[in-house]
Amino acid sequence: MPGRGIAAAGLRMWPASRRRGQRQGLYLAEGPPALAVPFSTEAAMSLPPCFADRREAGQYLGRHLAGLGFGAAQLGQPPLVLALPRGGVPVAFEVARALDGQLDVLLVRKIGALGYPELALGAVVEGDAGGGGPHTVVNDDPWARRAVDSGSFDAERGRQLDEIARRQQRYRGGKPVPARAGRVVIVVDDGVATGATMRAALEGVRMAGAARVIAATPVGSQDGLASLTAAADEVICLNTPPSFGAVGAFYLDFSQTSDEEALALLRTAPPPAA
Image 1 (cartoon, rainbow, N blue to C red):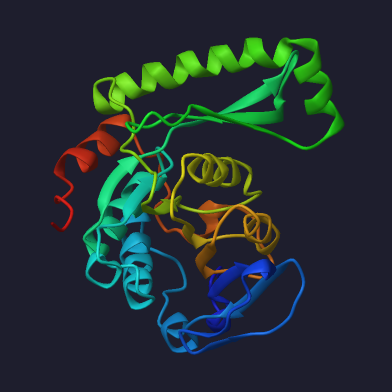
Image 2 (image 1 turned 90 degrees about the vertical axis):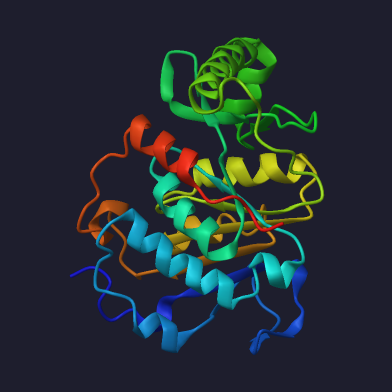
């Protein structure tokens, strides 16, 4: 069953450019562009074979993040916990509660190629209340560069900005996400497969001036997680199996999160610590 035998697979990852020697009892040696070390073998041993649902996964993830010093009391300010909707909302709800953090969503839309919408050329990440953004992330490949030059990229970007505005109205009554500048921002999803959406979200948060950018997820592929290290200060994942199929395989209940469920959680989230 997915999840068994991965006790030492809980990873905390830093970009190699942020080598710090000893941190949280972990030795960070010289290494490749993505450096990964087990962050809590004992805690990882207590993980269930599969998470019951997204909220249980969020409870485990929240406890780990609190133990790593991301709580409001340790940071001196409430972290901003941003969920990638809709599946990331139940996970982030529990994370924010464990950390006494501020919960919200971060809207990210893929920019597809003209005639080939499944081919991601980049993404657009919503702006925030501090006036930052929206931020456009362009993939570093020839397809994306040609599309930008042809003008089709801007047209598709405009359509996705309209969709973000529609979803902002749905989730926040049209209000932007809270300002990210100077904040410790934790971006949460229910899993990381390729890492494309999470990577765009992290880059957008970085462009908005966040002081620290953290990616956090209950489960992820090793390749997907490694792709995030250039965009995040730290990548936290509980379960990184060597053989990764689909995110849903690590949940007993992976039914789709509805807009109604996501909105209910956002409305009932406890306020952040003062």
